[in-house]
Amino acid sequence: MTTTAPNGSASPSTSAQANKDRGSSFASEIERDRAHRKKARSTKPLRRLVPFVLRYPGLLTGFVIFLITASTLTLLLPAAFRLVVDCGFDGDAAADVCTRFAFGEQLAGYFVVGIVVALLLGLASALRYYFISRLGERVVADIRRTVYDHLLELSPGYYANVRTGEVLSRLTTDTTLIQTVVGSSVSVALRTIATTVGALALMFVVSWKLALMVLAVGPIILGPIMLFGQRVQRLSRTSQDRLADASARASESLRAVETVQAFTRETEERAHFASAVEATFDVALKRIRVRAFMTGTIFSFVLAGLIAVLWFGAAQVQSGALTPGAMTQFVMYAFVAVSGVGIMTETYAEVMRAAGATERLMELLSATSPIQTPAKPVLLPTPVVGAVSFNNVEFSYPARPEAIALKDISLTVEPGQTVALVGPSGAGKSTMFQLLLRFYDSQSGALTLDGVDIKTLDPVDLRKAIAVVQQNAPLFSGTAAENIRFGAPSVSDDEVRAAARAANAHEFIERLPDGYETQLGEDAATLSGGQRQRIAIARAILRNAPILLLDEATSALDAESENAIQEAFATVSKDRTTIVIAHRLATVLKADVIVVMDEGRIIDHGTHNELLNRGGLYARLAKLQFNAEHRIPAHAP
Image (cartoon, rainbow, N blue to C red):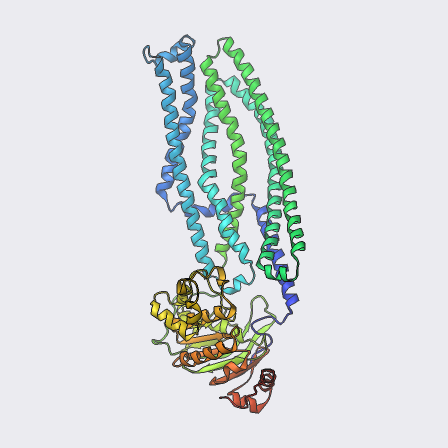
């Protein structure tokens, strides 16, 4: 075995510097998110949604059919009202029209036409809404699943550079925006375009003079819409930014609520959050004022323009150039056209927001993991015996390429052997675990399992051969039994209990309100640190993998529990390869080999007695720890 190099699994920077880096990363993520929203001025990102939509041709076809039907009936409705007015109230006003659509002497017939068209329009609109809404929900569900599946495939190195909260926001909030567009806004936009264009064309058919007047008034109406619409859009983006700031501040404080309360910072945190909320309110108030003024202005212009058109139309009716029914028909078409323009401006803003959301989601889907499954992965020998070998491995974390985490590491662990990695923080111990699990790939050298280079394996097959207990073992919401079963979901209840007994967890689990079926809550916050660690150890025992990795696995246990766990490990470690990271040297006295690391290098190895007799770093660490604990074993038990 040979050496390593500066830095280990963690950067040697101070906690203050780490906090500063996290704050800088947090701020950069917010700025990056704002930049994305500003770039959403094109609908091009929405093209990425087309493959998801085309998966459901039946829903898409149903939507198109009923969209066309509803739009056609919308344009027929004014013609039906023309019949009702001209033929139902004053048949002499348009005798030729009434003759073509005669219902004998039945006055009710003309009204029946209007009612039938209205009923058909309602049915077509309902079916259009059903098909597009179902399509929107289906597309969003598929996007969420696709993005989440992709996120699970990304290596831990990806998450070192992004905020998990930001990723979850994209997965939830951004997909909701897309659902609004696919399931509603696009439908409204297409229907509005169809009916607006159709209404404009039919206005010329009814009265080209009145149609030209409406078109002349159009720019007067569209001017304020475009002017105020851009202002509202800018204020909406600013409002989103301020809301994100407030949410980020609240999230930070609530995640560290114990620290906030311990340092009596409640008053200051309330003030910070209140300031962020007020800033959000101020921006929202500006947006409301601008929108209110825009609404008033547009309504005034629209109504004034329509009244002017009606004035001219009334003169046409009086002169006999138009019938009352034709005038009614024209006014309805004009209303459809003008209201359609207003609806399109609202829909445009939603589409732009969805374009930005789509862009952010597609960035997640475009993210690639440096850990790739080989095109033709090699299969591990069966059964896996657990021979692990590091051969001249060198590694630097991608986020810190200038700091060498491991240098020239060569280490062979024989099947069934127990090897302990000891040394100060930052020596590279946890980095070796991360390479063995293939969360990262080394820049040089090779790491093999049973003689097979792990880079040629499917990462899933590699990890199935390994059980791991992390220093701060994460647990999940669910029952105690479900957490123990996490790595082996098909095992029986008896096997779960056996693993819990081996990890010295059975007794405290039995004392929980519902025993093994007790819900532990988010991150198992209802358990103590030692209890959480014992469940994590039971989880690793139950996986029954040929390789067991223990990263400070007993760090959160009291002396009595630690002794019980050590006895369990003595049993569990038999017939399997065990690699242990330990700062507490008392936990590794019986290891077959103790590897001493410092600054990313292997500087010594041997048994406890051999290292103690040689002096050096291990002897100094042992003297400090065992003197502090008032027990100084000269030799391993």
